[in-house]
Length: 408
Ligand SMILES: Nc1ncnc2c1ncn2[C@@H]1O[C@H](COP(=O)(O)OP(=O)(O)OP(=O)(O)O)[C@@H](O)[C@H]1O
Ligand SMILES: [Mg+2]
Image (cartoon, rainbow, N blue to C red; front, side):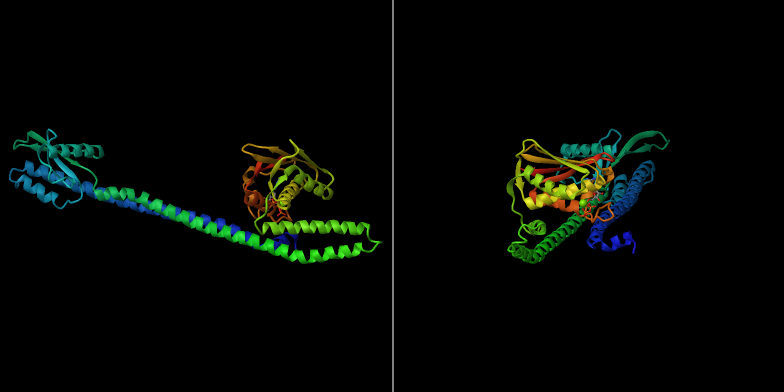
C-alpha cells in the first residue's frame, strides 16, 4: 500500500463529517438564495402584469369619460362615470375639472362624514400624492364644431393590493433568511455539542485507560529501586522520567475531559519548563529562546494543558522550518490586563488564503499530520482559558507568529 493510500485510510471518519458540515451550510444558503430569487422573479412578474391591467382599466375609464362628454347623444355623464367606476373597487381615482378642482373620487378610504371644504381639502391632498406616483391623464372636451372648451384630469395611483404585492417579496425574503439562519444555527450548534461530547468522552476514557498501567509501572519502579544494585542505575532513572512524562500526558487528557482548574501561575516559568523538555527532544539545529519582561508574568493557567499548547506550537514551528531555524517566544503584559505570548518561527510561512484554515479540524499539509494540533490548541486557549489565539503574522519563506492572549 502506498504511503498516501495508507494515510488516507488512517484518517478518522470525523474529518469527512466536518467537510459535510460546510457542504450542508452551503446547501442551506444556496437553497435559500434559489427560493428567494425565484420568489422575487415570480412576484415581480405578477406585479408587472397587475400594473398593466390597472393601467388599461384607468385608461379605459378616462377614454369613456372623454367620449361621453364629446358625444352629444351620450347618456348622462355622471351615470356613465358611476357605471364604469363601479366595477373598479380597488384603484384609487379622482376626477378633477380643468382648474384642478376635484369632482368625484373612488376607493380613497375617505371618511364619509367629510363634507364641503374638509372633503375638498382631503381630495386635493390625495391628488397631490397621486400626482407624485402617476402622471394624471388629461381628458379633452370639444364642442360640436370640434373646438376645445374644457379639460378634465384623472388622478390615480396603484391599488392597495398592488402596493402590498410590491412589498411582499421583501417580507418573504426576510422570512426565508430568518428560516435559513435558524436552520444553520441549530445544525451548527448540535454539531458543536456533538464535537464537545466526542472530545470530552475520548479524553476522559484515554486518561482512565492510561491510569492503570501507569500505577503499575510506578509500583514496578519502586520495586526495582529496592534492589541496591539498581538504585542508581541509569535505566531506572530514565524509566522514571518516562513514567513522569506519561503521568503528565494522563493529566492533560484528564484535564481536557473535565472542567480544568486554573491557577495563578508564572507563565514564563511554565513555558521555560516545556521548552527545556522539548529542547532535549527536538533537532539541535533549532534554537528556542524565551524572552520575558519582567520575568514573573502571571496568568490564570492550567499547567498541563498550557504546556500542551506550547508543545504543539513549537512542534509545528519546527516542522515548518524543516528542523533548522529559530523560535522566539516572547511573553509580555498586554492591554486590558492581558498576558501576551508570541511564538515566532523562521519557517516557510502560511499562505494568506490558508490562515483561516489552520485551526479547522483535519486541515494539514503534512504527510503524517492529522490536522488536529491547532484545533486542540485553540480549544485549550479559547475554551478552557477564555483566551484568544490567532496568526499574528505570516510571510511565505520568512516565518509565522502565533499570538496567545491570556487573562491575568
Ligand atoms: N508555524 C507554522 N508555520 C507554517 N505552517 C504552519 C505552522 N503551524 C501550522 N501550520 C500549518 O497548519 C497546518 C495545521 O496544523 P496542525 O498542528 O493543526 O496539524 P498538523 O501539524 O498538520 O498535524 P498534527 O495533528 O499532527 O498536529 C499544518 O499542517 C501546517 O500546514
Ligand atoms: Mg501540529
